[in-house]
Image (cartoon, rainbow, N blue to C red; front, top):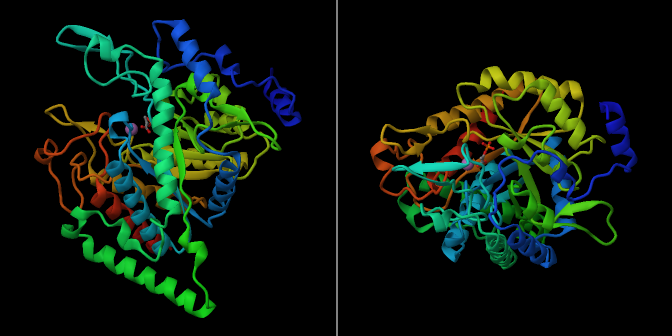
Amino acid sequence: MNQETDRLSTLAGDDNWQPDSWQSREATQQAIYPDEAELQAALQELAGLPPLVTSWEILSLKEQIAQAQAGKRFFLQGGDCAESFAECNSDVITNRLKVLLQMSLALTHGLQKPVIRVGRFAGQYAKPRSSDVETRDGVTLPSYRGDLVNSVEFSAEARRPDPKRLIQGHASSSMTMNFVRALVDGGFADLHHPEYWNLSWVQHSPLADEFQRLADSLGRAVNFMETISGRRAGALKRVDFYTSHEALHLHYEQAGTRKVPRQTGWFDLTTHFPWIGMRTADIDGAHVEYFRGIRNPVGIKVGPAASAQQVQRLLEILNPQDEPGRVVLIHRMGASEIESKLPPLIKAVQDAGSPVLWVCDPMHGNTETTSTGIKTRRFRNIMNEMETAIELHHQLGSHLGGAHLELTGENVTECTGGARNLVESDLKRAYKSIVDPRLNYEQALELSMLIVSKFEKLD
Ligand code: PEP
Ligand code: CO
C-alpha cells in the first residue's frame, strides 16, 4: 500500500487493524517462551482480568497533553527504569509519589502552569536489552528482560521466561494503582499539606530550605485564592496522577486492549500512556503497528539515529488525523549530541504541521560505565541536556513541554554529582537499580528547580 492510500484508509476507519495485527510484522525485543501452550494459557487468563485504567481517564490525559502542546501545561514523567515485583511495597510507592509531587510543586510554582503528573509505574516491568543472552564466567543464559518476563538472578531457572509472570505483572500493577489512587483520593496530594510529602531523610538536605520556601509560598497562594474567592480551593485539593510504561511486551499489551461501551475504537487499558522505546520505533515494525490502532495518547522515544523522514513517517502512521494530544515525542540524544541531532527533527515536525508534545529524556543518552563496571550518569550531563533542549526549542520557535526522568524516592547513590556532589566512590554505597541509574530525591528536586530557572532566563 502506498503512503497516500494507507493514510486515506486510516482516515476512513476501514483499515484492517486488530489488536493482534502486530503479529504479522517483525517484533523485536520479545521474550522467547519455551512452552507455547503455557504462554497461550496465561494470555487467555490475562485477557479475562479487569482493566487497570479506564477510557475516560485516558481521554482526559489526552486532553491535558493537547493543552501542554499549546504551552498551557508542563508534562512531568518519572519513575524507575525497571520496576520490580519485590519493590511493590508501601514505602517505595509512597516515596516515589512524594518526589513526583514535590517536583511538580516546584514546577507548577516556577512555571506558573499546571503540571501533568505521569508515573513510570504500575506496569514498567518489561525491558529492552542490547543482547538476547548474557554470559558470565563462561555460562550463557537468556538476558534479564524485566520482571514481566524473567528474574534478574543469574541462574537457568531464574532466567527462564515464565508466562505466569504476566499475571503477576498485572497483579502488581493493579496493587500499585490501587494504593496510588487511595493515597491521592485520601488527600495525600492535597496542596494544603505539602508536609505530607516530606521524605524523612530530606530534613538534612542542602535543598531543604529552598524547598520549604517554595512550599510556604505555594501555601500562601492557595490561602490567598481561598480568601478572595471565599471557598476552599477544591480543585487544588485533588491532583490527577497518570501511569505509563514502555509497551514493549506486545502479547501483554494485546491482552489488555479492549473495546469500551459508548466509545469508538480500541484502548490499551493496561496504562494511560504507553510509549515505544527507541529500539522498537521502526516504522515497519510490530510496535508501531500495534500503537497505530489504539486511542491512547502515545509516546515515542527518538534518539540520535532518528532521521527527519522517519519522524515524519511516524507522525503520518500514528496520527494521520493530526489529533491534538495524541503524540508525545520524547527525545533522548545525550548532552554531546543534542545540539546537532535535535534541530533537524524540530524542523521536520514543523514542516509536517502535525501537533506534537516535545519532551526531553536527559537520562538515556547520558549513560556511562565507570572503570569498575558500574552503570552511572553524571548530573551535570543530565542538566546540560535538559537546558540545551529548552534553549534549542525556544530558538527554533518550538517549545519543550516536558521532562521524562528516571528517579526514585529512595536515598540511592546511582548518579554522580548534584547538590551533594556524589562521586564515583559513593556509587557502591546505595546502588539498588536493577537496570539504569536513577536520580535520587535530591537530584530530582534540584533538576526541577534548574528547569524552572532555565525557563525564566529565556528571552
Ligand atoms: C527506558 O526508558 O528505560 C529506555 C530503555 O529508554 P530508550 O528506549 O530511550 O533507550
Ligand atoms: Co532506563
